[in-house]
Length: 310
Ligand code: SIN
Image (cartoon, rainbow, N blue to C red):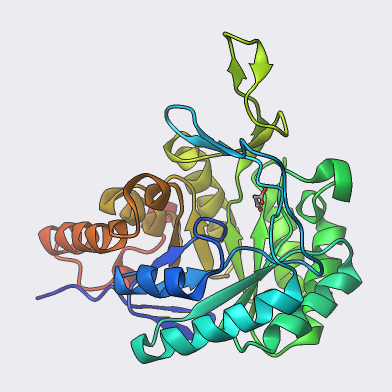
């Protein structure tokens, strides 16, 4: 029997649990459609904010070995331009039945309300609120996700602005992630995306002695942080009954299965697309399916969160 990889995320059905993580391939509708044709179960657009932002100067992304480090600086065309792009993406994805997740950032709780209402005009299936970018602290201050009260305020503002379910993207760079996740859920967040990149970190070119990223520091992602992402998903889903997109260094089917066993409902794919291109979605699905067949699992429900009890 072919295992059933479909999942339900905040009332939205995905044919498989693999979600293109935000920021990996921008917002262009044609690219989002390509990712869907390559087998993604859902796609997340790059975070957009109220105004256009050029982001940081290059270099903004570096492959340093077992992971990536990035400081893109929330480059985006601004919400007025992002809405038609999201609308076009939604139209292109409709024949495939693949959900679109819009992603937003803002500088204040009220602005999260404004942004949620604006992107709702494009009718995405879900809205992810990015409270956790580690790369803009010098301009925007501490990320909301470092504090339960700030997380709750931003989440509540977004939830009150739209009927579209809100996913809250949190940071691993905290001492009590469960308390922050709980604040997001109590404020009406329907699901969580765990985790944004770790750090910030720094990579120095030892020939010149200079940090390589133009921003000097950036968020660390990729296989090097997968055990941290798995632990975050495990801790939060063990403590709270909330659907989670587990993101962080998933490169193959076994990594994705591990994320589901930690408690994830869906699995974000980011660095693997950077390394292997969008074709990686079909491969990871096939590897998940092979593992499940070999272990006689009929659906992901049978393995979700099993690590909690073992
Ligand atoms: C960036 O644009 O710098 C990355 C976005 C993020 O980590 O949330």
